[in-house]
Image 1 (tube, rainbow, N blue to C red):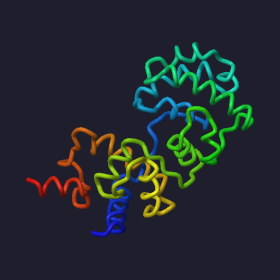
Image 2: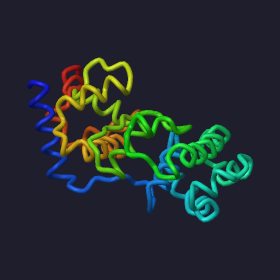
Image 3: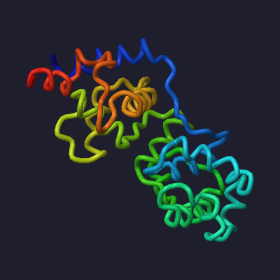
Image 4: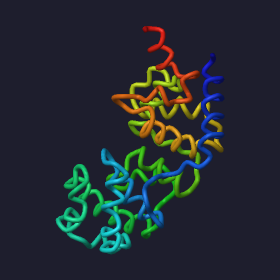
Length: 215
C-alpha cells in the first residue's frame, strides 16, 4: 500500500465514521479558546474545562486579564500543569494582544506566535478552530497516531510530522483531520496500551500489522 493510498483509506474511514470532529475545549470566543489552549499544554481538556468557567467570570476580556497580578491568575489555574509559567504567559499574552493587536486575536499563525505562551501548535489550533484555516496542530496524540498508522515516517519532531501530513491531507479536511487524530489517540490509540482490538483502522495500520507479524 502506498502512502497516498493509506491516507485515502484512513481519511475515508474517519469521514464516514466520525463526521463530526471538533475540540473538546469549551469556549465562546477567540480569546477564551486562546486561554483554554494555553492552559491545555500537558493538561487534559477535562481539567481545563473545570478551570475556565470561574477564570472567565473573573477575567472575561484580555483587558481585564492584562491588568491582573500574576499571583491572582495563578490562584485560578493552580490545578493545571505548570501553573506558574502559564499564569505569567496568560498575563503576558493579554498585554501583547492589547498592545500589538488592539485586543483582537489574530488569525495568522506567525502573528499568533508573537503572543507569550503561544507556540506553533497553539497557533495552528486557533487558526484552524476559530478561523477555519488549513492549519494542522501536532500534539502528542497526533504525533503518535500518525507515526503508528504510517501517515508520517521517521518524523523526529511535531513540525516534521505536520509537514508530512499536510502533503497528503486535502485542504478541506485539514481541520477535521487534526481532531480525528487527536480523538483517536485520546480514546483508542492510547500511548501505553493502544486498543487495537476495538480499532477499525488495523487493516491500514503499520503498527498493528507489525505486531501481528511478530506473533
